[in-house]
Amino acid sequence: MKFVFMNPTLSRILFSSLNLVSRLSWKNAFRLSDILCWMLFRIGGYRKKVIWENLRNSFPEKTDEELRCIASDFYTHFTDLIVETIKFRTASPECVKERLQGDISMMDNLYCSNTNIIYLMGHRGNWELANLFSSLCFTHECIVVYRPLQNQASDQWFLDLRTRFGAILVPMDGIFRELQKPRNKPYVVVLANDQSPNPKTAFWTNFLHQDTGVFRGVETIARRYNLTVLYADFSKVADKRGYYHVDISTITMTPKEERNNEILERQIRILEKNINHQPHNWLWSHRRWKHKRPEMLKPEQKLA
Image 1 (cartoon, rainbow, N blue to C red):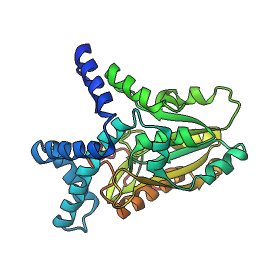
Image 2: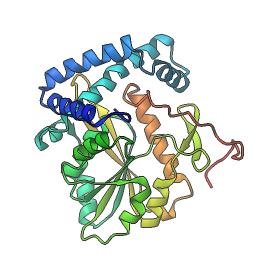
Image 3: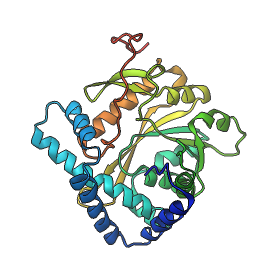
């Protein structure tokens, strides 16, 4: 949903339409998702080549029939994400809590011990719902790291969505300045860390049978500010469209004592396990492996 080239009139019409769609019932919203799925994938073939290549390389042991089933389920998941995100632009706090559930007592315990946290996730489940849930349900001050969109109108629309319940949104290049500010309560940094980084500065490892670069910033932030590192997985609830479950696990409570790249390696292994458990629930349309490991980096790179 990156609307880069739009004149102001077109922007107003589009986002007014999105706000109207957000008022639909959930039943009608998912009917709209079914129509979008048919238009995007059955008619338009949206990124089908990318999706198929990603699936085939990630699951070499699966048959073409199995991969087609995963792809078909992903198509529905993808358009569900679109209409769900629009719905969450005006959804009530009660709706957010109903749609995403799980045991978050760990967060309450860490707050009581005055512990600052970096809370990692991948692009599983609905990450916009995850952000709203975090700012709504966590006692910590919630700082969400995001990538600004090029189009000002679409960027503002998402900012309004993501800050509805008090979250502080910070671009990645501003997170260090943000964390240096004085605070009167513990904070949690919420960050999705499964995108494609600059290959020259990435940590390289094997992920889903492929040579994969990982952003190093998470580990740098955790070490510099001595943050407890948690990982949150958002699985889809079976046979209950639009509902998700969160499972929170601890990567480390002592980041400065971990070996170099160990935090990143643990994070990627958890994500890999969760994807294998529920394959269609990940952003397969993303060009995750568009970069290759630079020649100057040895293929046998291991943990330091």
